[in-house]
Length: 156
Image (cartoon, rainbow, N blue to C red; front, side):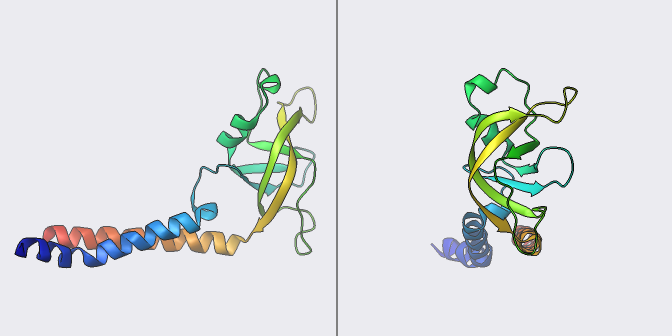
């Protein structure tokens, strides 16, 4: 009984930190997870190419592609969109955005290029670069602190 109490006291701070990391991961999944489900993280392109570069969500895009389009060798790293997301601060739409939509077709720049999915955007929202990087940095620091605490507890 005494040993269990010592173990609980010894691992109290790492346990609390682990719970905080789990809660943050759940609430901030748009910024943290490389795999998105139900939405696609994109960065706008300003060129004579597809409209958006897919940062996260290629697996989701593959899953929502209609069977009639799966016979084509689609490149899911870039997409065409029916509505280009933009804001007053980003009129070209080149910042990060989370979009929800469905694949409605395919398109390409020229006959030599690969086919890219065309997505009908149902909703979108902007993601701030600074917040995105800050959240990832904080999570990495928290994980390092947790590993250091666990290692110290293990050595003790």
